Amino acid sequence: AACGGGGGDPADFPDDNIEIVVPFSAGGPTDTVTRMIAEPMSEELGVEIIIQNVEGAGGTVAAGQVAEADPDGYTVLMHHIGMSTAPTLYPDLPFDPLADFQTVGLVTEVPMTIIARKDFQPATLEELISYVEANEDKVTYANAGIGSASHLCGVLLQQAMGVKLQEVPYDGTAPAMADILGGQVDFMCDQTTNTTAQINEGKVKAYAVTTTERVESLPDLPTTAEGGLADVEVSVWHGLYVPADTPEEVVTKLTDALAAALEDQSVIDEMAKLGTAPVEPERVTPEEHTTVLEEQVASWGETLEGIEAE
Ligand code: MLT
Figure 1 (cartoon, protein in one colour):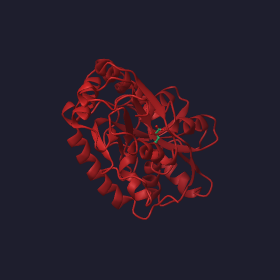
Figure 2 (figure 1 turned 90 degrees about the vertical axis):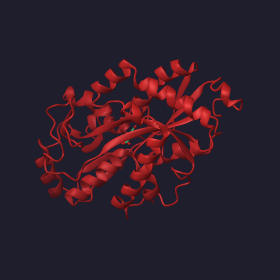
Figure 3 (figure 1 turned 120 degrees about the vertical axis):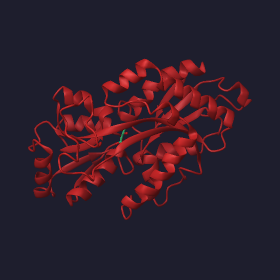
């Protein structure tokens, strides 16, 4: 294991620190959700949980690394919807999300928001659509690399608007947000876990949420459907993974600790402030997680056909 633990009897698991690998920058949406659950999980398991940010290639560098780790439960991957888009976007992906991993359980589903630098001209989603259509060659769109949620939302946006924008990739949407705040890039679609504070403090312009219902913590924001972009609907599901062949007894202990963390009132409250919630308790299972992963690999495979990373 990366943390030097394990190798021992699964019945003794865990008897050393556990590492959770986050595939994007510190301070961004995936990191934020991971940090929320790490402490209650650590209390439940009785060992330290260390968070390691391994950025690159829209989350696929981290996933590739965990796929090759010892299957002992001491190296865990937090990943999101990108796990299901990567096989289509990366024809030479060095891992298979279904064959090379064991699912631990779903964590949360996070709405996305379409936001822009504060002085970006359009004021509403309708205005954004006409502005982008008229200024296709000069508008810049920030994302966290091909395979990220912000990239996926950008693909849906461009398909819906019939445009091809200049995309500016970052290692995560934390640094992308820094450039939105600094005015170096025009707009992006990013998770509420990273945008709620900036929107509520008026530091960015916000146009819409990408879910079918409005988000309670951002009640004034219309949905994409209300604003004329019904096809831009995406919710960023997250889950925990360990390498395939991890003993079942070990996986069960991780699943149980995750389930306990998601019932922790402070986790529920923190998530609510950022526009999200834990998945329903009955969905925190490897079986449900695998079902979602299989369905999503298939459905994004159709939507993203023909779009490939170099
Ligand atoms: C992040 O943690 O930076 C994000 O999840 C990036 C993304 O997928 O858009």
